[in-house]
Amino acid sequence: MALQDIVSQTVAGLGYELVELERSAGGTLRVSIDFPWEAGSEERNVSVEDCERVTRQLQYALEVEEIDYKRLEVSSPGIDRPLRGEQDFERFAGEVIDVTLKAPMGAAAAGQVAPNRRKFRGTLQKAAAGWEIAWSDEPAAPQPGQKRVKKKEPAAVQVLGFTLDEVKDARLAPIVDFKGRRRAGVQE
Image 1 (cartoon, rainbow, N blue to C red):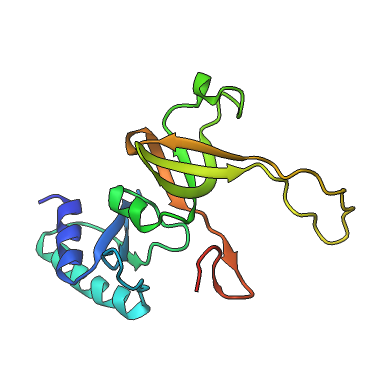
Image 2: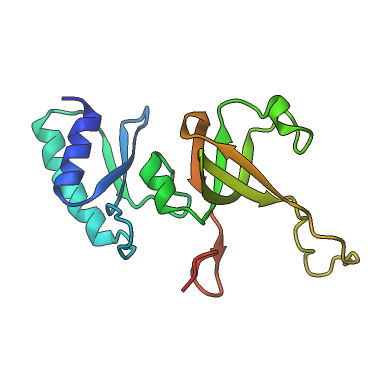
């Protein structure tokens, strides 16, 4: 049985979903888990106790299957969670994400962005023919002590449509509001 299958079945058997599995050259196995998502259900976060539970069960399963590893790390996906499939994109529609495309924009950019640009950060939205990301190239607010520039016209919102086949990597943007101690963009 393949390592991916063993870990995936063990994690699913405990009521979680496997987000990411990484095996390093040094023998470390890194496993990211999350709760399965259903539309309309309340978001739950993975706790330390959840990670301990999965770690204990994986240690037994890997020993039985005689999988060689030096160290096992089980964690939540974190604030920069990878988006893998259609269900992840549906789950995080409306959130700010970082997307890297397999191929640069090329002629499709029509002069709006650099033709060799592949990385974008913006709000994920469902589109008729797949997905789209909307962003504005608005300059960042000045830091304290910096000279403020007169108000300019706000930068236009740009939209890029894409399909999941065109995506090399997609992750939630690691934006944190420390004052409110919640993800930026999350409405309460």
